[in-house]
Length: 255
Image (cartoon, rainbow, N blue to C red; front, side, top):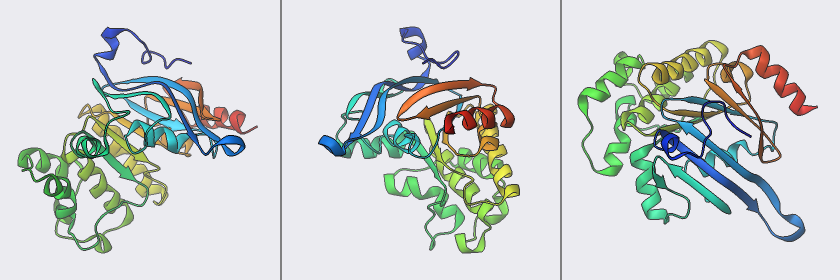
């Protein structure tokens, strides 16, 4: 299965890829209880693209994200972040790589309650023991609309504002790829749309590469492309998605 204008095995296209999976499988358990979470997934996502990953419950969406982001190791196959093979990498080196080259946005925000918004945004630098690019961080804060909220702790912020802090934290280190796992799942409709518009902006304006797992056809419509998973395999792709088209395709996957 190919992703239009994205998936290719040529060296030329690989040079422009932010993320590449080659025949990735992931199995859990043994014998009769083996679960095949991913079955030979191959896909290349180009730098500066916004890809949504969709599928029914149990289709392999979360496993796809975990293997692609280096949070889980595939049973077989290869995962490349840019020109770096991360599958098979030792955990200590992988932890450092994720800290420097990968950003995460989760449904539950994952902010530290005792830290202010500013301190949460700068936390990756504190953990890495390196200085932030103050000019870039200031631009990220302005882009995410948090200038007047930097001194507030998470409990003093709305859900949408907390997710903006999470997006700013993910952007602050200028990662190669941001992985978003159901980023609007805990938000009301208005806040969710604001966060999706922000994610769309950081791809279109800042050239960020974004991979988003979602169950929401409206959220998927903000992406450039959609990958549809079922039973651990990519069964379809869509470019220029709309809410109606994604809804229709998902209804056929669930039938």
